[in-house]
Amino acid sequence: MKVLIATEKPFSKVAVDGIKEVTDAAGYELAMLEKYTEKSQLLEAVADADALIVRSDKVDADVIAAAKQLKIVVRAGAGFDNLDLDACTKAGVVAMNTPGQNANSVAELVFGMLVMAVRNFYNGTSGTELKGKKLGILAFGNVGRNVARIAKGFGMDIMAYDAFCPAEAIEAAGVKAAKSQDELFEQCDVVSLHIPATPETKKSINAALVGKMKKGGILVNTARKEVIDEESLLALMQERTDIKYITDIKPDMDADFAAQCEGRYFATPKKMGAQTAEANVNAGIAAANQIVGFIRDGITKFKVN
Ligand code: 3PG
Image 1 (spheres, rainbow, N blue to C red):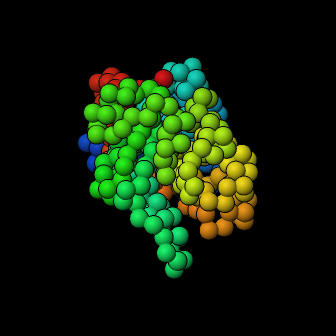
Image 2 (tube, rainbow, N blue to C red):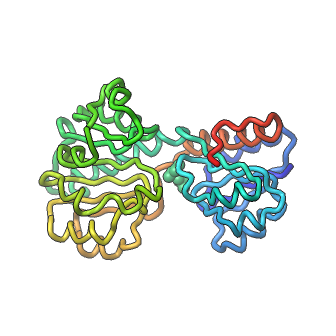
């Protein structure tokens, strides 16, 4: 049984060591493809793999077709928009994610970026504090809940909206439930996005919505670039020169945002939300255990197709 780790953005060494312990114990072979630059390298590497562990790496129909022996692919992370689920299903490949495993890591980065933004990107001018400010959390899943927990420590006033999570469940976590997405943007000084990229959410964060924010509003994106309507957000930020946008996923229009929203825009050079040793260990080892659990015992918990 051969397990391939294919990660354009590699896991930490400690995570790879942990994955190897799991695959060794099961008697499986472990192969690695890290920092690849061409899709052809991935197509070649998957040819004899029985199981595949990826991060944001694109597993499309070509990859599935090239992976003739593939039985399972696990996205070591939460969002599985990089997996072609139809292609997996048609080929009889089980697809899974590892929900929650990197959530704290992403949530901590929200505050890393947020403090930088309210302190004016450390340019020496007087900024503001987070204490007492209203934070809106859009989608109250594993990351959103961790963001709420940390925000309490900052003394923020927290609201959340989730189209799929009942208000009672949000309130049970000590967070005020907004009645709608619109209300969240209207009420909050900061809105942090934690929605997945789906046909419904793609380009859903647009000028009409962000434009509802109060003066000095900050939009934080550690979710997906696809949820932003970039053209409309950029147009809004040209008009509303008080709004800041900080993101862990470089927009396609990064150069335009950087040039036209100087001092109000920041994008990490590479997505860093889940890039901690702890998140890599948690998600990587969970992925390996899920593979062993599926191949050995037929366990399909966390199957997404
Ligand atoms: C996720 O969906 O789990 C995060 O976006 C992390 O993505 P990454 O593994 O590419 O860092």
